[in-house]
Image (cartoon, rainbow, N blue to C red; front, top):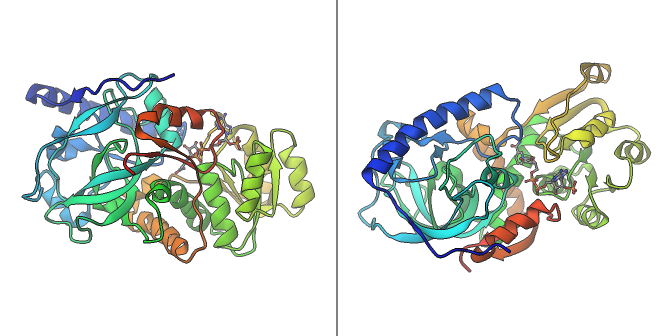
Amino acid sequence: MHKIERPIIFSSSSSQVSNRFLGLVSQSCAVAYNMKRSVLKCPPELLLRQVSTKHCGQQRLGNELYLRSPPSTSILAGKICSSSAFQRRHFKAAFCTELGKPLSLGLKESSELCSGEVRIQVAAVGINFSDLLMVKGEYQVKLSPPFTPGGEMSGTILEVADDVHNFKPGMKVLGLCSAYGAFAEEVVTTCNAIWEMPSSMSFKEAAGFVCSYGTAMMGLSRRANLQHKENVLVTAAAGAAGLAAVDIASNVFGCNVFGAAGSDEKCSLVKSYGAKETINYRNESLRDKMKKICPQGANVIFDAVGGSAFKDSLRSIAWEGRLIVVGFASGEIPQIPANHLLVKNVSAVGLFWGAYSMANLDVFRWSVDECLKHYIKGQLKPHVCATYGFSKINQAFQFIQSRKSTGKVVVEIRD
Ligand SMILES: NC(=O)c1ccc[n+]([C@@H]2O[C@H](COP(=O)([O-])OP(=O)(O)OC[C@H]3O[C@@H](n4cnc5c(N)ncnc54)[C@H](OP(=O)(O)O)[C@@H]3O)[C@@H](O)[C@H]2O)c1
């Protein structure tokens, strides 16, 4: 049983800050090097940029990577732009104080806003696979403890920097934390990484929407150019990214979706999201079942598992099929025999959704705008399988780890 420890205050002295800052510079180089060098062990959901380019970020201990700043404000980088309302205070946050160990709750100190940033009172946080890896030190973006994990959240804007005009205090928003740190009562992030919440969406639904739906939309629509009525095979179809892909392919594109998942319960859920057929790949062969239920093969495959699920899926692809490489939840990075691509004119496409936040911000924002548009029309239905209170955060992580979760698991920071 993981006990939440007595609150500790994580604060900074100036010498700690400068040491930290120097550490960050070398850390960012290591991150960039690792990312370039490796076929990413598990593609990151968020591509983040090092805070050393933004001097005002020195006050933020622990979380040091940033999404791209707004182009219009880049000349202001380094300038503190907090409104006059800023008051330094302490708030509750979860800390990874040692990699691989349970998180503990402590107090964190608020910092002033930089250009393009907003301060959010966090309501709920969606847990991502990357959070699990990050607190174990197994993610390709490596943060040194103590740090506050958490990449996506929903909440209410408390304050905006002077140069932010499209968001106002009091607005309910959902989005990403440009420097992680979402498991906290308060977070600062760039206005590029947040969206206004539709009025029909709850904080709980909103907390887990952006990453899985944004990824699924980017993969299916932009990377695979999915067309109405095509056959789509989704592996880990009840998982966060997988179920979003099933939802979008079935209910936005009107495709014939075949969902593969690891239990009968998961398969039922996938079917309830519009899948035509499901395959429980724990007790039946994906390849054999696909031959039976989809003899013409899948036009598009959305694979977040890797390993044998990937290999079997590739065998089930149609002529001119598109295979989207989304992730490696199995921990095994598969190899693609080039002859398999050649004989059926198949395209294998990589997907690193978060990277669009730096490479093409418009496309990045489009991926979420598009999902929100369909959500508002009632076509999409984000699934939250379990909600935990802030003090039960370690149980929430364990639940995902146990492979029993479906859709998203959410931690409620405030009711
Ligand atoms: N490329 C991108 O931009 C991007 C964006 C988001 C996520 N991802 C990646 O996609 C993968 C899935 O993410 P997610 O958020 O959907 O995670 P998730 O909700 O935890 O789903 C992962 C699912 O993978 C399946 N799985 C198969 N083998 C597994 C194993 N050995 N251990 C654990 N799970 C296993 C499980 O479903 P079954 O029991 O049904 O097999 C599990 O529920 C991760 O690798 C993540 O990093 C990539």
